[in-house]
Length: 393
Image (cartoon, rainbow, N blue to C red; front, top):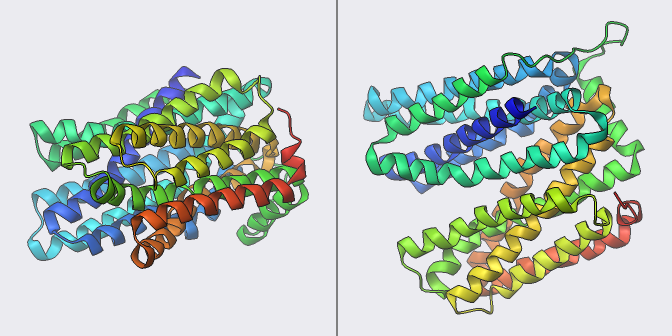
């Protein structure tokens, strides 16, 4: 299990380095924010189409082997980025980068379902929830470390060194999985068409009220991340008056706070009432986020941001552990693919909405509107999801 967790950390670090590299490369090397947005969409948007099929594959095949397929797709992406930087002409660089981003998106589509399905097979069933929380902590750490590693490497080198480091993450990650063995679907289980099996996943979620409500809670929780990514840079510049270095430190607090929230979930997950904690965490996170529209002191705003991040990291850790625990073994890949799609699509969609609100209402109004909208969603969710609300562990 330690090898699997370390492999997950390195792979998530490499994956988020891919995302940041695509965005920053198109912004800095090509000089286009529009293309950077398209690149980000290709990096994550592919899961809307291919994530469902990845879930079916994770249930039909050995999910541990599917992880290596995801790693291969990321390596193809990074190889394309390397070629774009070292050999491509100016006219070739943009399409090469965008095609590479698409392969990175394919990698993400298979990555989450395969790893979560593998975890479901190799973890002791009695410890599946805490091990999923520990796994989610690797996700958060990888997300937080990626921009720091890129900054460190670029301070001593260039984009080719960044790409090589990301490739190294996947090589080592795959080596750590060399002895991990998982089972494919038993031969006596009927294999149906892909669309029929995707439908089975939806039916399983719909038939389990707690599982359905946990999935809805994930949607509410991830709806906060898009506005944070869109609004915080403008808030730091226009309201708090921070310079470039200070803005970087301010935004970096979010990643640190998410990690702290995930760490806090490890010892407290067996001591708190999960349902109540999820909804209280969402409400508190939304209120503290809305309060960022009030604070003008950078220190106070930073403390509030830490509160938002810790609440988010704690809540999401409980939610994904609950989904993993409720997922039937034969449908785990398909159900966890739904969670993976939610974790990628909802932040992007909520970020688009936040951008529209920002443009029409200004950053201060957008912050409190988005924060209170999250509070409203959490309260409505608590009222409409009694099964989750009453879930103790």
